[in-house]
Length: 65
Image 1 (spheres, helix red, strand yellow):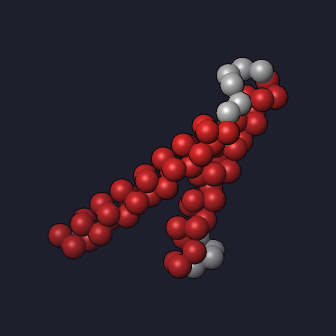
Image 2 (cartoon, helix red, strand yellow):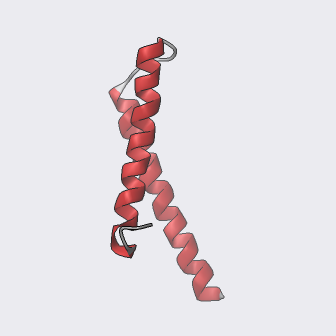
Image 3 (cartoon, helix red, strand yellow):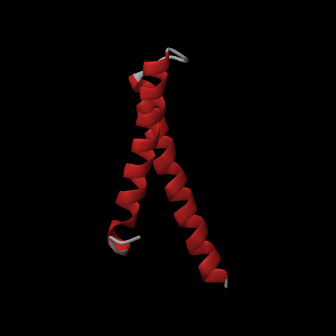
């Protein structure tokens, strides 16, 4: 990533949020599925939790290597 190591998490969180917004907006435009604000929130939280789990996994993996 171009922004440096300290902003990597922020870029990934914003990417998670942008991805879920894109999916929800597409559902709104096409009429397929239901556009819900709570879906945006829960998907964004799930993305952040996934990043946290991935970070913990990488630290454990690097410690054992």
